[in-house]
Image 1 (cartoon, rainbow, N blue to C red):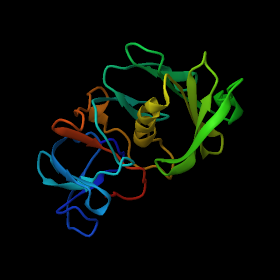
Image 2 (cartoon, rainbow, N blue to C red; image 1 turned 45 degrees about the horizontal axis):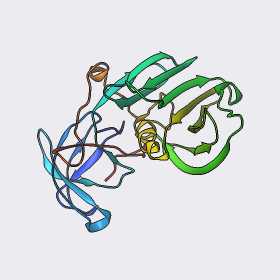
Image 3 (cartoon, helix red, strand yellow; image 1 turned 180 degrees about the vertical axis):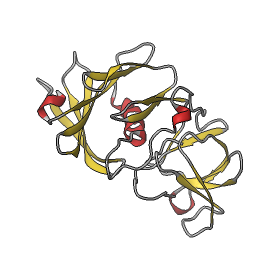
Length: 226
């Protein structure tokens, strides 16, 4: 479970089915099956409940995850990656090899986030909601030595901005960036939740869709979804 606020587990593959429970961030499910009915649902088994969760990619992601926690923001990142730095100068998340990088930085103003990208053009824009805050994730081409760059700025409160800047080897890696966006939380009014304290250094694990476990996520910050 990536979402800071939880996701409903229902008795059937429908939003009208009874809610059997709510899965919190860090919950690991065993994947039992799936159906395209009602937009797509996954049948899952947790430690105490078996039921259905939404299969919408906006709410779910497979993989193994570790947790990063700070006073400025919390986020989950793929297990095996490293997290170095600090929010004021940039926390860099990176895989063991490859050019991919995801950097989160906090700043008192938008210009000081350092998101300007020289010699690049916007190839696409995706409206996203990060724990209740709406913005656009821009994908740039023709920068960073020929690699693509993704950038997102969130105005959390007066004098408080959070920026994401990612270097990608291919557009397909934008899916990984979205997992960061989906799981991020921060201590501001529209955002509820965050990494449970007990999960600060404990990986949250699940395996890909082709096997038996599943980690789910949601964009909404005011109520559980699914």
